[in-house]
Length: 280
Image 1: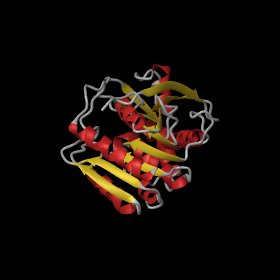
Image 2 (image 1 turned 135 degrees about the vertical axis):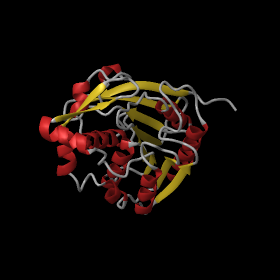
Image 3 (image 1 turned 90 degrees about the vertical axis):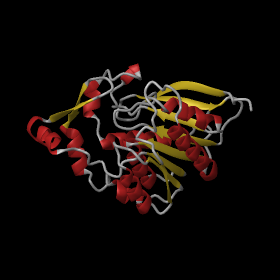
């Protein structure tokens, strides 16, 4: 079977907060899709990391308009693939990511990247922390028609005593990026936001309010976000279906740069393609 052609463009958009969101737009080359999928990365992630371009291409070739984007304060800036703006990374908060996500949902629903023609239905896909944000967004936003989460967190509370002590005494804590070797700051605003907006940022409580079709994909051997978190989300979500991929980890064995697909990644992609075919 001949491989379907795809169009790929880059775009920028600026929400009211004034910081730039950089996006990739993919679509089938010979048709105008009636459905769209918005893809959100996780913590220390970016839209061009590892499996994201491959995943987005597969979704586009399956007939969707696909919009992947970098959160405005994810730290990569215009470089796209390197963390060149650690000050921005340090200032990021979960509420800011939800603001970005809502903006991207609204712009996609308005036809921003489809010639002014609003899609008939919009799917949302998030990985890891982006999955947790996607759950909150799907609970809050009537514009989301279907949800898929990959290795999603069931809680945003992932900080140890040493981090809290740093925030309390110095206003900043530091984390390591194992891939790049960088020491990356996280300012106290992240911790304050999590506490001040605890009800809104309760992922399991949000999962209980998700009424759209929801596919929960998780690797059985995920060492970063244990599979028990996926089970909690699936139990909470009235429309959730759990797909545990045996022997697979947090990124489904994909690396950056992508060295090729893997059995775990293929299982996640195929399940997601089927889910959006059925639900959008």
